[in-house]
Length: 309
Image (cartoon, rainbow, N blue to C red):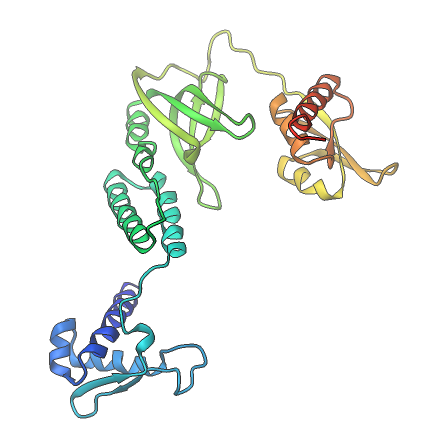
């Protein structure tokens, strides 16, 4: 794979060079590109099938080298080194940013350096473009987490919860990293606030602070009672069946009266239930919990009040 990548990069450099150095000797070209004659000729033969869509002799690159000297034509589309568009460089910046939470400190520095170069390219291409990357370097320091796991230390973290749309500070005892089938990384830890084990999505950890405190025992905490799990009844229509699959709704049966479905689900917390009902805009209802229904109605009324009638 690396050999193919280096060959591809070499050919991209070779075409604009040959286009501006018509008639260069094969031997000299070999020295410039650091390859032997056999590999260079293989690259030149490959150019015969390169070009623009259409792929006839009118679109493909034409190369001549039979006499020991190289000439190239019909390569105007890549006569100059290709430049990234603003959209392409922006996509690369976003993709590189997503890697920052999954690499070591040295790789993180290299990625940030590459992002800075891409920003300069984008801003130079369009003077109206301004990309702020000042916050990227403040990404969570995984080194502190690694050290805490190794030395069994507690950490203080600021964590964003999508169910409440809030950032909260929590004291945790980190245990190990986990990764799901989509290669999304989590930190498995004991949360002293919840008195339970939790999985924290790495990309939602906004800050990590060392406490220099040894982790307290959390397998048998004195005075801690197991929280009783509460289940609530839900009504949903066919468009909301994905919600039943994602959140594991139990005892799901069809409600013959209105062609919908009825089931029960574990109540993670009140805020989670309220936001779920509001987000699904009538496709999901809570028929029996009076307090939740009242809170949902008040939230909905408050939202509607923001719009002019």
